[in-house]
Length: 287
Image 1: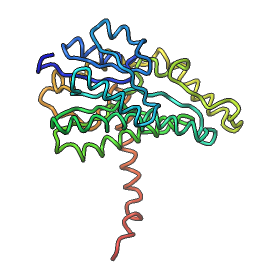
Image 2: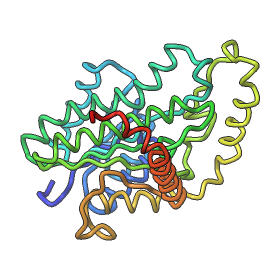
Image 3: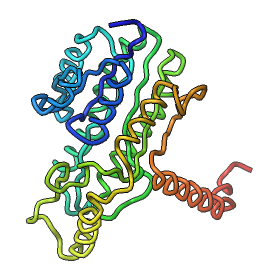
Image 4: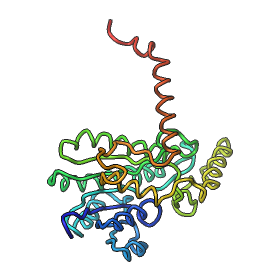
């Protein structure tokens, strides 16, 4: 291991963007610790030179911390963390059980946050590091019958914003990557989808559930985003090379033309809403 080689920890590397980020980093000469709930499924990455470890962010904080320590022990440091692992829960909020809500946030928010907290003492000691949380353009607008996933990704982005305010002084850089629809397995109903159980379904929501399920089903395999090209951009942004040479790592990185247009529209709509109620909202100050 040379001083010039960066060490990456990438979660959720079985397929999709996570796998492509790991392969891209390896192709550029960096070192990669790739994690999965089932490391035996990472043979493609290990053949390419990655070290496979188990990190299951559905577990409790103490277990996740032990798994992160094992990942740290592989090369003795982690320079760049990419929190990528996640899944999609579909179903309306009323239909969803308490456990389903907790499970969605454990996998998409609490687990990634545990990984960050486990790494921070090491990054602070070295006064350097990059943390990239993979969010979603869906965190900027509600998709009926998919709001738990959207909310979990919005929470992860705000945690990233907060971390930036706390960690910039230590030389640690934070970003939330907000992908649009990329051609990965994320929308595959047989892989990363968990639906509210049929016995909890409410007739009033039938059409809404069917519309959302159908939208994802029809989009799967036809998404405009190329995960390999996305991984190339992510690599260069996080290493401040190539297309990102001479630029700071952005606090939020929209990835894909659909993500750019979606987030821009959300920002305009929110600004217009605040402006339209500005006089009423401002009337609450002391005279």
